[in-house]
Length: 429
Image (cartoon, rainbow, N blue to C red; front, side, top):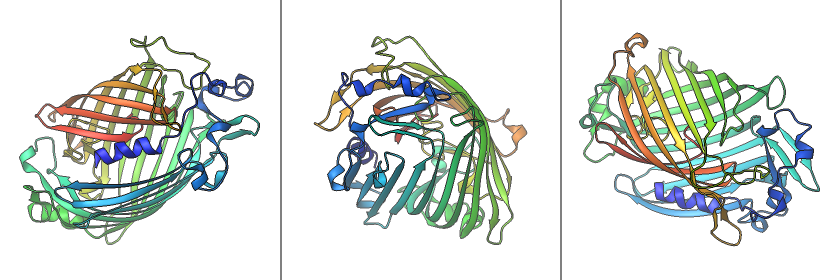
């Protein structure tokens, strides 16, 4: 479905004014009264037209139908409806609906709503929006036929691949706030989910079935109805949450299962850090620093360590592989009760002035990313230092439509010869 998501990314991108438009300039007279002004995004009135859904189509509302075919799940289709200015509240609310169905029974439906809590409205000019403070609600149903599991530990082989189907239903609420002042260096978050998970035999061609290959783990992870609570706090000096160019972040988080049907409590705790700084540009002159989003090349580093306590189903254990960590191999390639990973990226912008797709949509700029990653997993935290280290390298394509809308396509290759293509919204770290 990667190609479908790329097309969808182009369709849902908000329009960008011409480079000479004065609305691109950050309003210094308004920013000087705010704490941490570099952490506020400027949205001019041109990006907030009023009117009903159809009247704002292609500007702040988007409807995207699509079809696709994948051998293991059949022919499918669906649609996405996105309103980035839901109820025309000056970009303070966002709503999104996604639905897909396939001929083999794979399904996904989700509806999400989010409200930004840091907003400074100036009706004659635009809105200043802080990107650290928000809350939201999500309702989702998924039935995935091709979830992969290779076994536990760092010594598993690609030939160990097994699959399972997983049906999940959930409703959740989340909030994130900064302190001691709005946009401050400290950030906390809490997410609560009521979720049901049911497993069945997998559909991946040529793979084993987890139900017969790992019956104990399968039974422990099946019929799992639970309350999930995720919470964390971090010290974060980055200049943005979605697309930072400078600063660092260090925090702790825990995803706990305090209540589950006929099971003991469990949790996964993590320590995560990142660091980013600007570097001299190679393909442009750095642009006008007075713009809302001038092109800035950067380098970034990341690390994480996770450990599991108590009873946690195998599909919720720490993993390496996929869209964000160890992108050179398939999602969940390595999995166990403890894991560590580290990564580094160089992110140069190559086409700094962008180009137009249509009268309404303009790609702000296009860039590359060169990345290298390493990590491992183990049953015991003390065994991580002796576990086999796995690595991957790769290159990514990045493009933006505004600072809050970055899309990426990463192609990675692992040291065992596996490769992976991932497409996602936002940076991996």
